[in-house]
Length: 215
Image 1 (tube, rainbow, N blue to C red):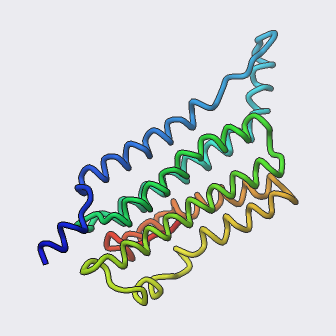
Image 2: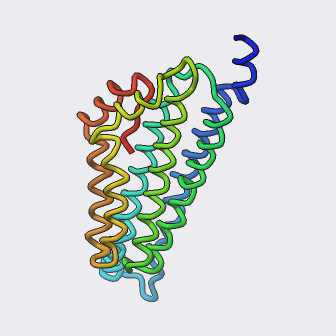
């Protein structure tokens, strides 16, 4: 038994969580670095106010991206809080998840530079969808860890509105972008607000016991 546990462990939990937290912190910091002050030919109060108001799509996407990364970080904490070991499958899936988290600042900058055009907005939604899918796969991997959190049937039983809504909304929002980019961004922002509500946060903690997802 001890020998089996040794081969399952590829990295200490502390180092795993520290690396993940570092990536989340860097990604969320990069968001604000992609916001650039307006370049005014004649800086006056009126021109500055006008330029800042014109940046509202950038601010909306920034706050939506910030909240989304924060939600993923929270659920990541809940997922691994009670984990006793990190397997190779969890390590690889987590790296894939983090790769999409790091991609969010790029998609945010893309919208900031190009504006709310269909392709840029749909690409933003696609990254959110892939990130959400990776998190669900990571949850699945942790559920199947021997002796940790049950079986595939247990994983299916935990599927509910909270952990299935995200992928569905991100997929729908990506398609909606081709009809109305603004409506798509508002839908993504609403999803972020929904998962930040106290009732949803409490439901996540209660459902996980350290092992659920609502992304």
